Image 1: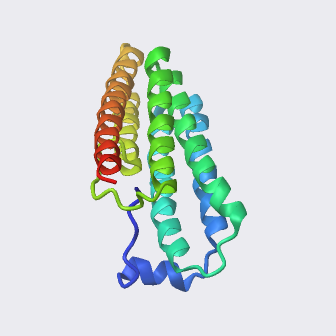
Image 2: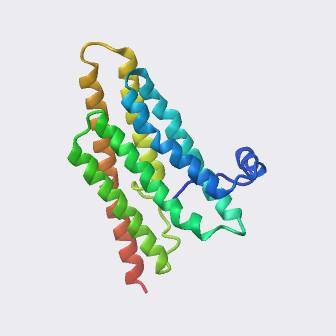
Image 3: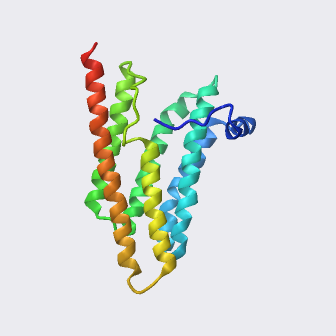
Length: 202
C-alpha cells in the first residue's frame, strides 16, 4: 500500500500541474534508488547522499499513486514495470546495507520476505481482495522509513569520524537491516492472517 498525496493538497495540486507522466515518475524513483549503492561505495560523508535519494523515491511513490489514480490512459507497460522498479529499488537498498557491513543472510532473508509480501498482496488483489482494510508493518512506507534511518545513522557516524567508525557504521546498518527483517516478517504474518480470514468468509 502506497501513501497517496491528496489531490486537493498544495503538493498534490503542484504534482498534477506539472503534467508528469506516471512512467516518468517511476523512472525517476528507480534512478534515485539505484544510485544509493553508488553513494555508499563513495564512502565517508557522501553516505548521507543516500537520504535525499531515498526521499526522492518515497516522493515518486506517492506521486505515482496520485497520477495513476487520475490517469485515463495508464499504459500496460507502466503497470507491469512499476512494481518491478519498486523491487529493484529495494534490492539496491539492501545491497547498500550489505556494502556497509550488514550480514548477508539478513539482507537475503529480508529481500525474500519483502518479495513474498508484495506477491501475496498482489495475488490477494487478483482474487478480488482489493481493500484489505489494514496497514501492516510490511508496507513500502515502513520499509522506506526504516532504511532511511539506517543510512542516516551510518552517515552521521561517517561524518563524526574516528578510528572505530567502520565498526560503528556496520553496527548501525545491522540494526537497521534487522529491524527491517523483523517488520517484514511481522507484516507478512499480519497480511496472511487478514487474507486468510477474508477468504474464509467467502
